[in-house]
Length: 185
Image (cartoon, rainbow, N blue to C red; front, side, top):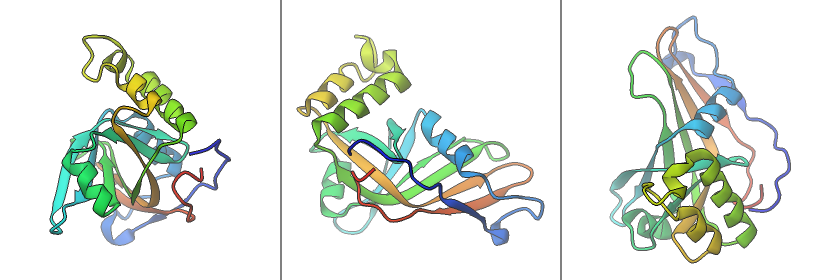
């Protein structure tokens, strides 16, 4: 991850087969806002034998990618070392309201010190006392991320994303992204 340059926003395409007749495509800024403000994400990775592994985690949307941390010996880290393909999901746990967002891409490890600092800062801004105070659930996380001596940090650059608008009108929107390598910003 280096200093970022602006990217062209993906074009939303409504899937009429899975949408209410009155639905319109969810604009990308709405889906991006859900990624920026989500407290919890769900990561799906692939186990060595091909079975899925799903786990909740905290993460940040920064410069066009999702970033999250994990210990080197955790199942998700071991899975991603063998197969970087993954899905990151967030949204509302309600049937008739909210917006669910699914990001598909490849998880790439981040090791650049400047990039790790930006990720650590984003965690502090987003999660505040949860990551900064002694009683916080993830106390010390930003410092260990910034130093590069703590958990692994992964970047997931979207290849494709989906937004599922729930309620009336419900709709399924697909976003295609221009190809870029992780870390290219």
